[in-house]
Image (cartoon, rainbow, N blue to C red):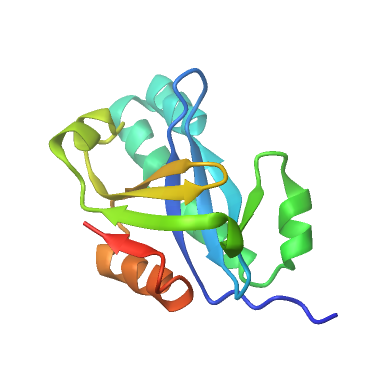
Length: 156
């Protein structure tokens, strides 16, 4: 069986109220969406504690997450899913609607940086919500989602 090709990807943040937020790369294949963990908010908080505002900024710039997301492009989907217990997949057949919304004042206030590009809501068997962090282009995210989920994509 041939390996699934990754058609596109972008970085997102999963907000978890009782634990540290998780940064994922959303990987779009022809059959499914794969969420691969690329970092956590804990590392940013350690940077704040150790280096003040400069440490927080350096820990939170996203360079490490960008490099990890790029490295995933070369890995097999199977190895990505097995690499971390927080990684998961959603077959497109289980998605009824994929919403990408421009940020509201409320979603900006909930962000640890106050700056997000958008909010994603995946509706289906299990609902998932993510924030698109600053540094991601909103239209690029929309275009990637549209390329694999044209009839399920809703942009607000």
